[in-house]
Length: 412
Ligand SMILES: *Cc1c(COP(=O)(O)O)cnc(C)c1O
Image 1 (tube, rainbow, N blue to C red):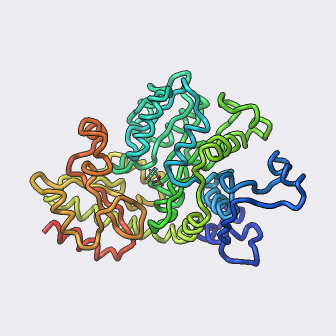
Image 2: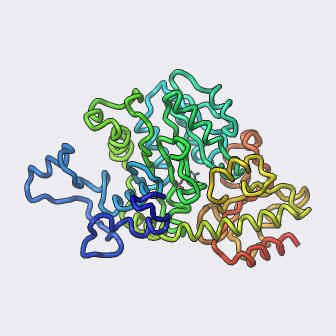
Image 3: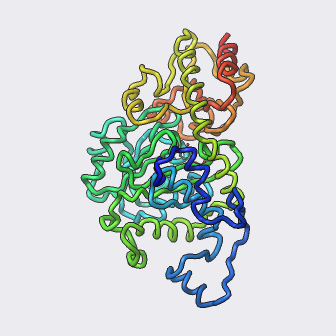
């Protein structure tokens, strides 16, 4: 990561807020709870509204505590600008509301976070058809492109089966065709991978997960990497074309996606997420080490039918993951041998908690087909490679030996 002095990731995150003056020299950006911002001269208020002067108008469109977090994420992603939202889903929803029009076409990975999959189904019904493709081979993406394809959407490592998209080749394809490339970086986080390196124009992060890291605040973000040429995007309204072209996308996303739909991130949540992000690199190093140790232990056990983790040499995209990611992250999934009930197994774990979150400091486990992927039904589950006994594990920062012992004793 890349501030001007080429300092490391954690140094840059820790000192990000102080790149701008902070009130009273406070070492944390303060939590500003005011919804409105007063101006002594009414003309100044008008200038802020007309974009002639920098400043805040109303909490839904921007807040100083949230801006400090946005700057921090921009530095993490080596991007140009970031917008924060109330949740990760709100950030993805803002892409639809802010950038798509009826009749547009979207190509999306079929290996997706469950709620994103559901969102794309809704969008299809609203007159913006979505083609789902297996993104592990760029040829599938290329075949799905149409003249009205406005964006290609992929996740880095898919949750829960851990397929890794053909990130670099899809980036090249999108650049050649002038199509906006959107990468959901939640599973890797900007510590393990920066989608800008493979040509992404917009980067999604669910801040709720690894960036906040403690399961105590929801949030989401969109980062413009500066690589996409917005003059090639047909849906930018005239009122946003008065800015320099590099700012068109973010200006329209802020107005249409954030201001008009209103899913603003609260300042208290922004503070929690910002403090959490200070230890992200340390947490992810620990989680990645433990996840690899657990994945190896389980894949060597005859009572386990399959283990899905990009860090295992047997993983189909291990080579891509090894070449692009700093480590393999804290998420893996596994299937028990036939005859072992996944609920029996989960109920025998003493440290790992059955719960639906990931990137938390605590190790969380979930029976995927019976919970987060229940609504879509068995056929769609099968098409996504979700076995009925699949267990997803989000590895926390507990001591590695304790986790190994816990997952082993539950098998015994
Ligand atoms: C959790 C998650 C989201 C949504 O984030 P929320 O903050 O829960 O709305 C989006 N994408 C991925 C890959 C996720 O894991």
